[in-house]
Image (cartoon, rainbow, N blue to C red; front, side, top):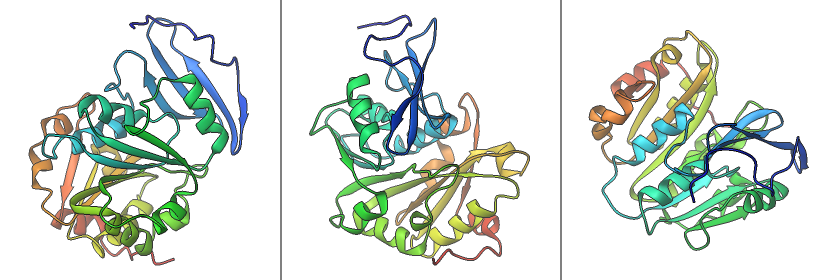
Length: 268
């Protein structure tokens, strides 16, 4: 059903309590768009008519990276669920995909199931647990893609940025699988550089994707880290990445090592 904007009767007015704070829906007046705020910060975007419209630049970049994989259904694990923006996009782009979204906030999971028509199991399963806990017990080779988009405040939880966490992701990935991690950082991008160095100790190939101004240290923003045990060269020619609404710059292998510089891998 096509919508032109306006609130759904299921949606609350103003913030509502969740386990980790508050959630609020901001509804566009003239478009079928809804933004989920968690503790006042934009967490997810939902286009009720077009699941592949993900709005946030870093999610557009992640979707473009996933699009470089061979055609067909995928097994995708999303560490960090919220309103499942990227999961909805994958579901629309690759019918038959099987996805899991891991979200620590049980009340938020209940609410987004009520507020939005999310894909049903087995297409999308929602798991209420801590992301690091889930990773520790994940079956080897269960996923073609693992996406990390988890934040505690404005930082990724410390137990998800270590060499140990990268090793856990590598075990969960099937051969040729991709790991995509969202890192929000400030100039001079010390966290992103350390995470790039960390991933390089575990994976054969690492890429860094971000808007040019962010990579040059001009402003705060999202840096998408991509890791794989097979070549990432296909990203170098990805038109959606380089010619998107906000064109991204892609660093591969040697350029990533230069980007990481003297940053030490994160061990604890």
